[in-house]
Each structure stands twice: as structure tokens, then as C-alpha cells.
Amino acid sequence: MAAAVTVVAVSIILSGTAVPPVAAATVEHTFVVSQVNMTHMCNEIPVTVVNGQLPGPTIEVTEGDTVIVHVVNKSPYNLTIHWGMVGEGPCSGGQNFSRGLYDEFSSGSTINGKLGDLFNCSGVFEDGYVLDVEPGKTYLLRIINAALFSEYFIKIAGHKFTVVAADANYVTPYTTDVIVIAPGETMDALVVADAAPGRYYIAAQPIQAPPPDTQTPEFATRGTLQYTGGVTNSSRADVVAPEMPHEHDTIKSFYFHGNLTGLRHRQRAGAGARRRASLRHARAGLHLPARPQVVQERDEPKSNQVIANMNNVSFHDATATPILEAHYYRRGGNGVVGTAGLPDHPPSAFNYTDPALIPFGPVEMRLEPTSRATVVRRFRHGDVVDIVFQSTAMLQGDSNPMHLHGHDMFVLAQGIGNYDAATDEAKFNLVNPARKNTVLVPNLGWAAIRFVADNPG
Ligand SMILES: *[C@@H]1O[C@H](CO)[C@@H](O)[C@H](O)[C@H]1NC(C)=O
Ligand SMILES: *[C@@H]1O[C@H](CO)[C@@H](O)[C@H](O)[C@H]1NC(C)=O
Ligand SMILES: *[C@@H]1O[C@H](CO)[C@@H](O)[C@H](O)[C@H]1NC(C)=O
Ligand SMILES: *[C@@H]1O[C@H](CO)[C@@H](O)[C@H](O)[C@H]1NC(C)=O
Ligand SMILES: *[C@@H]1O[C@H](CO)[C@@H](O)[C@H](O)[C@H]1NC(C)=O
Ligand SMILES: *[C@@H]1O[C@H](CO)[C@@H](O)[C@H](O)[C@H]1NC(C)=O
Ligand SMILES: *[C@@H]1O[C@H](CO)[C@@H](O)[C@H](O)[C@H]1NC(C)=O
Ligand SMILES: *[C@@H]1O[C@H](CO)[C@@H](O)[C@H](O)[C@H]1NC(C)=O
Image (cartoon, protein in one colour):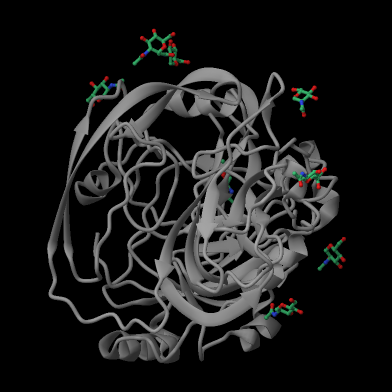
């Protein structure tokens, strides 16, 4: 099983076809979750699947439809199903399961579950995903990064993408030869089949922060875009390969994400007004600088582990009492699940993105003491909340995707280095920021977001 899975789903756009308005419908599915044995990366391993399929089934809906899904759990694990544009791989409450996936393998990549011909088991090349196209047609690719860790460059030799949506929100059409996508992000892109008929690789290349960051062997994967009627030679040598960016080219990711802006005229009237209001009237908002992804000595087991924290608080698995329940009944104690708020600011300021902090040692560790807790941050309904996510150089300078459940975030600005309100607030895009549910905090940089707390829960 590949730890990193990139899924590309494809549908054809019939040029010039207007989509008629349709009445809201109820769409009903049954998901049977089970564990099957699959061969991946030369080993047979157990995989949790929905309805026997990997990737799982597609739910096709029109905005406004009601979706009812009956979930039958026939797997040996307690599980949750995550809804909302994100492919986080098979969700599972089982610690063993997640750990097993990581340890076996940490480095394979797939497109629609297929490893592709960069990988071979005993000399036999693996199957790759094949996208058949007809010359002259335009295709809409819906790309989901379902990987656990890796951000990817995606290219198709000889073709360009026009990115039209990200995280299910329209963006100003952006034409590029490379798509950069972080775990949990989705991109919708148009590809015109306008090259010479033949075969072209669709390649996905993992990105990682350059040394002195820890380097992990990570493998690219590729599928093929092939023109109907245009393939006269089945030799692999005949497939045109794209020139991929270097795996350390993190600035390419920074620029790609910086170039995404929201498409203004396609907002529905109500949403548009709410959006304008929330963009202009941020005075009710809170600033919540937070720093993901650092390292700490963890008290149990007695060893150093990589853990993430925000403003000195790291995650505590609150399995005993669900967070909402604990909050509602004010169950606290031992800092396990508390009603204490997540602090507004990091308790101590330091040069967060100084690369000298990357070779992590005892000096750096003292900069980031961490308490484990599940803390709650309260907002009033309608509050407009600003958060600055500041990444740090501690151990890992990798970019961090931050996901907010149940809300879209306006991406106001991003930058390299340390956020400085005095100069950076002036860079906020309050005109047409991209709306995302997963925001990439750049490698050794920051991202400022704003959201409206209008979805109680
Ligand atoms: C999967 O493989 C394991 C070990 O070989 C075996 O015990 C198990 O029965 C298999 N499961 C299925 C569903 O075939
Ligand atoms: C699943 O959850 C139930 C109820 O919380 C618990 O008793 C059981 O031990 C859990 N099973 C696993 C495999 O974690
Ligand atoms: C799950 O992990 C626990 C703790 O590491 C271990 O005791 C247990 O045997 C594991 N269970 C399975 C099914 O691997
Ligand atoms: C297949 O992979 C093995 C190593 O796993 C390598 O030695 C061999 O050259 C590869 N075969 C081909 C045809 O690339
Ligand atoms: C197919 O392409 C390969 C590599 O370009 C070439 O060596 C081979 O002769 C071609 N075969 C045919 C039947 O054209
Ligand atoms: C957009 O991308 C170009 C390079 O392709 C870069 O020069 C420019 O700074 C980017 N814009 C933003 C706002 O990041
Ligand atoms: C933070 O570290 C960087 C890299 O060493 C350095 O260029 C910058 O001046 C430092 N900033 C401050 C405020 O010390
Ligand atoms: C951060 O958390 C650690 C561990 O609980 C604690 O000792 C320390 O006092 C906290 N630092 C601040 C500034 O709150």
C-alpha cells in the first residue's frame, strides 16, 4: 500500500453545453467499509476500503442536493468517515492501523490507486493510470491530494492546466504548466487535448524541504494521457515525459498558491454579500497567531517524538470524552480536555524561521515547551476571525496544510520568514482572496487567513 495517494478523477466537459438548473434531489448511498488484502509495492497488505474499492466510490451530486449515506462498518476498526472535499486516506480510529501504514512503507505514490511504471516488482512494471482523450476536446480534472504527508508537483507533458477551482470554490482561471497540491487540497483544472496525437506522461513528484531538513526518500508516480487513434507505438520510450521541477523547489509551491485568487462574479448573491461583509468588517475579529509543526519531548513514552503544537499546546487524544461533550459539561482535569482557551499568541517569541534551528537539539527544544491538552477556543456566532499560521524551522521546515472543518477560509496573504503585522497587514487581499478549506502554510513562512464563525458546532 502506498502511504501517499494522489487521486485524479476525470470528467469530460462538452464544449458549449449549458448546465440547466435542476431541482434539489436526495442522493442515497450505502458504504460498506471492510478490510481486504491488496498487493501494493510488491507486498500483500490489509487495506480498509469502501464497497470493496480503492479509491472509494464517487458520490455525484448537484449543489443543494441532500446526501444520505448509510455506513456499515465491517472492518476490525472503529472508524470515522470524513466529509468535505478532503481525501485523508481511509479514516480509522485505530492507532495500529495508521502506524502500520506508515511503517510499511512511507514513500510510494499512486494516481487513482496505480503506482505506474516508475515502480516495478521483480522487473515487472506496475500498471499506471491511463486517461484517454480525443483531440481537440477539453477535459476537467478534479485532483485530490489524498497523501498523508507529501505535497506534489503535477505535470502533463506537452499540456497546460487552467486551474478553475480549489477546495470546491471557483478561482480566477489560472494557466500554468504545473499544479502544486498539498495533502487535503483539491484542484479542478481544465486541460485541452491540443498536442500532437500520441502519449504523454502525467507525473506527480513529491516535494520536500531542502537540507538541512531531514530528507525522506519519496517516489514519484506517473500515469499516461493518450490520444485516441494517435497511438501507433506501444513502447514506453515513445511516451513524452514532462520536465519536473526539483523536489526542493518549494518556492514554486509558494508562487503557485500565491497566484490563486477567488473568482468574484460567480458567487451567489447571498454568499457574495456575506463574503463582502466579512471581508470589510473584520473589527470583530480576533488575531490568533499559531505555529504548527514543531518538536517536543513527550512524557510518554519516554522518548523524543515529533509532534505538532500551536502556541505551546499540542494535541491530546481525547478518546475518553469527545471534545464537544467535555466542553459542554465542562469536564476538565489534568489538562486532558479543558475549557481553557487556546492562547492568542505564542508564549515566547523567537526567530521562528531561522534555518539555524533546523538541526534540532536541546537548545532549540527549550524554545518550545509544550503541554498536551485539548483546548477549546470560543467564538460568538458571526465573529470574524483572523489567524496567522506561522511555520517554524524546528526540525521540519516542510510546508503545512491547515484544514478548518465546516468553514471556508479567505487566504488574505502569505509570506516567507516571520510574520510582521506592522508591514504584512498592508498586503492583505481584501478584494478577491481565494476561499479554501485547506490552507498551505509555506515552508519557513506564514499564511494569514480570515473566516466567519457561522457554523455552530
Ligand atoms: C488477508 O491475509 C491475511 C494474512 O495472509 C489472512 O489471514 C486473511 O484471512 C486475509 N483476509 C482476507 C479478507 O482475505
Ligand atoms: C471500539 O469502540 C468501542 C466503544 O468505544 C470499544 O469498546 C472498543 O474497544 C473499540 N475497538 C477498537 C478495536 O478500538
Ligand atoms: C496495537 O498496538 C498495541 C500497542 O502498541 C499492541 O499492544 C497491540 O498488540 C496492537 N494490536 C494489533 C492488532 O496489532
Ligand atoms: C526493477 O527494480 C529493481 C530493484 O527493485 C531494479 O534492480 C531493476 O533494475 C528494476 N527493473 C527495471 C526493468 O527497471
Ligand atoms: C517504437 O518506438 C521505439 C522508441 O522510439 C523505437 O525504438 C521502435 O522502433 C518503435 N517501434 C515501431 C514499431 O515503430
Ligand atoms: C505568481 O507566480 C509568479 C511566477 O510564476 C511569481 O513571480 C509571482 O510572484 C506569483 N504571485 C504571487 C502573488 O505569489
Ligand atoms: C532571523 O533569522 C534569519 C536567518 O538567519 C535572519 O536573516 C534574520 O535577520 C533573523 N531575524 C531576526 C529578527 O533576528
Ligand atoms: C508551555 O508548556 C510547558 C509544558 O506544559 C510549560 O511548562 C510552560 O510553562 C508553558 N509555557 C508557557 C509560556 O506557557
